[in-house]
Length: 201
Image (tube, rainbow, N blue to C red; front, side, top):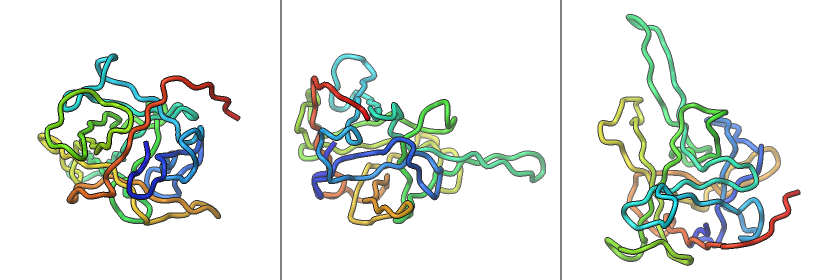
C-alpha cells in the first residue's frame, strides 16, 4: 500500500515496538521499495474470493512478522462501588490520534483488524478492488475516547502525514487513524503482487 501524498509505503518491522501507547509492533510509512519485505502485506477477504467495493471486509497481514494491521485498546479495571472496566484506545506517539500497530491474537486480546475500503476518487464506486486503485481505508471503533461503548460504532480512517516519531536513534513517519475530514493524506494506492519469491533474512 503506497501513501499517495508522500509516495511512501505502509511498513512495519518485526519486533520493533512503540515506546508509547500499546508498546505493540510499530507501523510507519517508509521510502523503501514495494518489494521490501517490510512493506509487503497479505490481503485477506471475508468472502475468500474477491474484494467488492462496499461489501467486503479485509485484513492486512504483515508478511514478515505474520501480524495484522490493527487498532487496539487497553482494558482499565478500577474499583468504585464495585469493579468497573472501561476501554481506551491507545494514542499515536506524535499526533495524538488513534495508534495503528501490528498485533496478533496471542499477544493482545483487545484489538480490531477488519478494515473496509472505499474508492477515494469516485463516490459509491461499484465493482472489484483492482491493482492501482486509490482507496480510503476505515476501521470501526467500538468505544469512544471516554471509554464508553458506541452503540453503532465509530469509523476512523487510515492516514499518514509528515509528522514523525522516534524509537531509539531512528525516526519514522507516523501512521494513524482519525475521524476528521478526509483529504489527500488519507489516500492509498493498492499495488497487488500476484506472485513473487521472497527470501526473508
